[in-house]
Length: 282
Image (cartoon, rainbow, N blue to C red; front, side, top):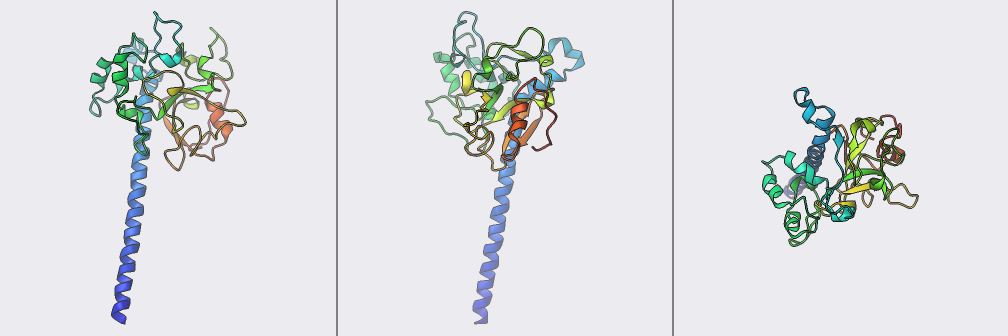
């Protein structure tokens, strides 16, 4: 009898230890995937960080603006944003070539053609690793365009990316860091680069990474009946249980939880709202 009890105790100890190990491994993997997603955002936002803090020796060569959210075609001025290439096209040259052959991908893209041009569709089917969250990555068929898990933040409302900045003075209250047809100079971001959202992580209807329009650029929907801003089933996040990662205009990355006061995110989505710095982690 005592031997049977001893065996049962050993089995229970083993199962308990195995459960603890499995739980630990799951937590480590979750944290590793979270860090990878944050690093992806840092890479995508790196051009903004460099613009904000240029090397003094190259100051004249470094632009001081966030580029347009789409690639404009002089020969197709009436082409809608959804028909153009996305802002991710601008970021490709600065990505880590050791992680993916981005140089080869660039040669496949014709930035003088719409996004749906045959040559561009070949490039669009390539999975851009830096545009994908490593956990619960959206799956698409091999013959379909690869998607992005990160979108540019255009301000407030579905039409935020169409808002134009006046030549001088304060930006419109719903305007964000991106607009389809024009760049945004850093000096127009009067809230401060560290107070303004640049790119967000989203599982909500991910679209092709190479396509302009709402697939890669969105405003936060502040309507009363809109989805929650952050969390599973929300406008942003959906990949990690503890919230959504966002890159800011200074190149830093923060995570915001479903408990974040909505007004904080809505305020940080604009470039001239006069918000104060939120609590770190909120």
